[in-house]
Image 1: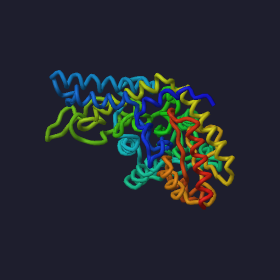
Image 2 (image 1 turned 90 degrees about the vertical axis):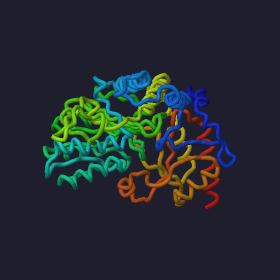
Image 3 (image 1 turned 60 degrees about the vertical axis):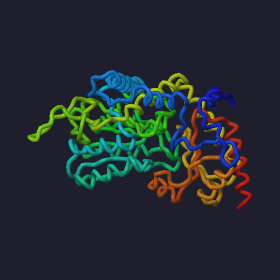
Image 4 (image 1 turned 180 degrees about the horizontal axis):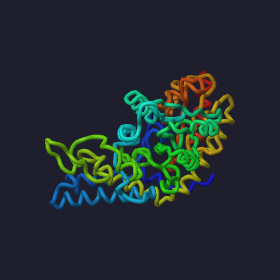
Length: 405
């Protein structure tokens, strides 16, 4: 198969590393992606040349750092096609972004007896915050089932969209199944019932073009470290109409307008939700990661990764005695599978000794494992720097492991 991005492997020094004397083959990109030189250099230059606390300083370094941080916010807004950079809130990642909405939206708009909807394919970070909200405010958490191929049960979804539902929280792309949910259609259906929608975009943003205006999303969350950016920085996009009405998530510096012992008032958006010193180094490095993938072209990335995923899927099926979880026609660059009756942990451990980095276990999706009646899977997840030859090495390694058992 054609590999249009082979040349960019030189941008990722870690891909030249050896593991147990073997060439590293990194297929754990759904957990975190590797970082190109430009991102690491941005972090280095940020600390060496513009390291000063932002927004409150009148000196040169502080003003430069502030400008870089707010330029990064504008970069994210453009990347998501948000109408206003003020709708971009920097967080520590997708998990914090979802917790922010669960706390603040839940406080403002949810009352006893209301319903929150999620699906069977959600990551724990899009389940547990809603469970906590339900416990706190005496709400109900209802779960949309999925079909055997990993698609959302849309008939069940339609039936569950009732007047009691306040918010639907759903993943754009499943981190286990790779299923790409039809989120634009889901949002349209929810909005017909005046239901707000939060999209967990952690597994989508690195692989497909996201346009929050076209989707009409109320909230959209993603993490920097899963899209070639640094760890510890993430994004919550929220429509102004919601963010204006939601109370702050945390209290402290920066999120205030005035503080007196008699009471305090809140800053304007987005700062109302950014208490304390933000990761201004991480935000500028995230902008570099965004510029990097934009230069490669998101549509071209999606086409290549889809081809690579199909190449790997066909190769796995030719092995025989392989069960793949998630066979939707609409699928991103993730393959979760089991090899015969061999425990996924054993397979992962042996693959590691052969230089292959894959993820094994429940992938922070235990309810999904329960749905399929399994304890866990082996997961190969691809990025734009992966190549077919790495898949070939994986297949050879799996054949060898099978002979061991």
